[in-house]
Amino acid sequence: MQGFDAITGLGACRRSAPPLKCTPMKENLHFISLLKSPVSWAKAARETIRALVREGRRVSAVSLKGYRYDEEYPLAPEVRQALSRPRFDGWDVALDYPPNFARLNGRR
Image 1 (cartoon, one colour):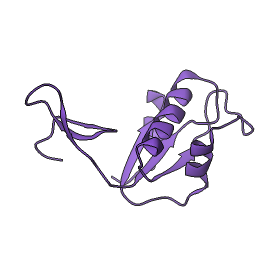
Image 2 (image 1 turned 90 degrees about the vertical axis):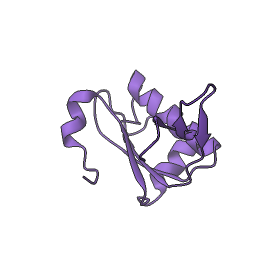
Image 3 (image 1 turned 180 degrees about the vertical axis):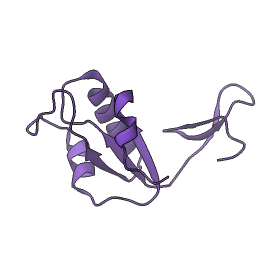
């Protein structure tokens, strides 16, 4: 997204003058992260998915296995819905423990 300073849940944003001026992004998102775990980065990922869904974004997700993974971990309805959807075309978003980045299977 050439010409933009940041890509956020709000959209593509320019810092030309405070406050940030954001253009809403309507692309679908496919979220890749450890979701079924009590660890902090998994909670951040779950809350990010919930926030995106509340914004009206279409989100699909896959839960990676990792530290303290628990297949039965309780998930919010928005996260369960994202996990049950087929993979959306659009942007791949990954939130994971940095040593795991090399194993991500997003498009290059």
